[in-house]
Length: 227
Length: 67
Image 1 (spheres, rainbow over the protein chains, first blue to last red):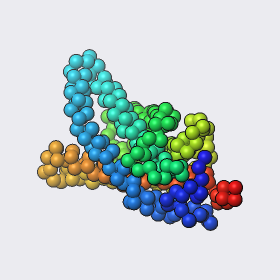
Image 2: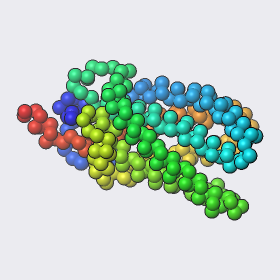
Image 3: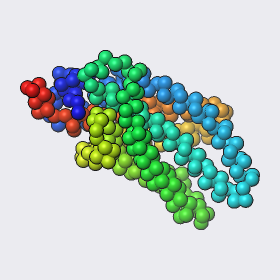
Image 4: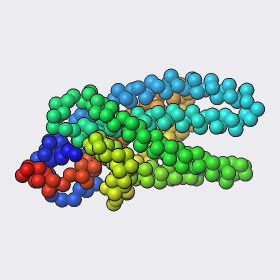
C-alpha cells in the first residue's frame, strides 16, 4: 500500500497530523481539494447525467403508457415496471458515481510514479479494479433500493393508501426519507472499501468491506450528515 | 436534507407560479445536478481522506523515511 505522507499526496504534503482528525479538518481538506481540481473532473459526468435524463425519459413514458393500456393488471403492472425502470436507471447513475468515486480515490491516493498523471487520465487505474468496484456498487445499490425504496413504499401503501388514508405531505416525507437516510448512513460504513480497492491491488472485496466497517467506527454521525 | 428542502421549494414554485412543465423540468434537474456536484464529489474526497487518515499513520511515514 502507498503512504501518502511519504509519496506526496497534495493535500497532506508537509502536514503530518499531530492530532486526531476532526470534522472541521475533514471538511476543510475536502473542499480545498474539490475546488482546486476535482470539480472539473466531475463536471463532464454531471452534463452527461443531465442529457441522459432527456434521452431516457421519453422512452420511459412510452413504455409505461404501453404497459398501462395493454396489460390486464393495469396500474399494478405499471407500478412494477416503473420501479424496475427506476432500479435500472438510478442504478446506472449509482454505478457511474461509484466509478467516479474510484477515480477520485485513485487521484488522492496515487502512487509516486503516477504523480504527473493528468486528472483526465484518472480513470485508467480504475480499470484494474473495475470488477470489484462494480461489485460493491451493485451490492450497495440493491440494498439501498430494496430497503430505502421498495419496502418503504410498500409499507406506506399497506398502512395508508390501501386503507384510503392520505396523511399530509410532511408525514409522508418523514416516513419515506428517514428510512432512506438510515440505510444510506449504514451503507456509508462500507464506503472506504473503494479507496482501499484502489490503493491495494491484492485486497479482496470482502476484506475491503470488513476493513471499511472497522475504520468508520465513530464516524457514523459525520457520514449521516454528509449523506 | 438538502434534496428534501429543494424538493419542497420546487413544489412551492410549481404551486405558486405559472412556470411551464418543460421549464420546471429543466430547472429542477439542473439544480439537482449542481447540488450533486457540490455535495457528492466532496463526499467521495472526504471518504478518500478518511481512508488515508485511518490507514497511514505518522509512524508509517517515519518508518518509510528511516528505511
